Length: 104
Image 1 (cartoon, one colour):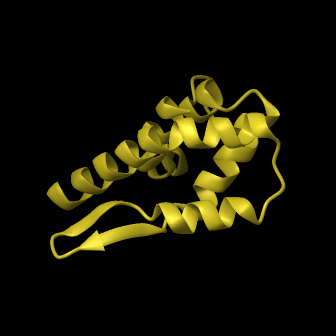
Image 2 (image 1 turned 120 degrees about the vertical axis):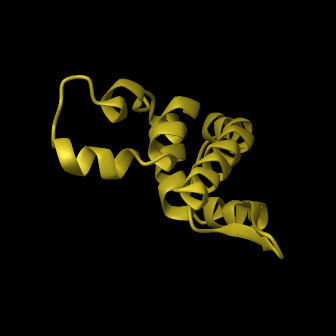
């Protein structure tokens, strides 16, 4: 999930717009294989704009918003565990992508 988040939040969609469908697509290579992983990635895509912002910009994910959104979606314990385990890694990928974007 971390590799997919790194690619997605570090400009992956723009790269894919230029190439279309390629055999070594990082989205395809890192896509979630389990139902729980697919559900978690769906939540990531839906909540990507839910961020905590301080005086100097984005400081992290808005965890209460993410948890509230996830609570609206029925999920089993394995999916909930995967989401809670992945959130810190996803937060890092989001922040890294935003830092890179602001440096350019």
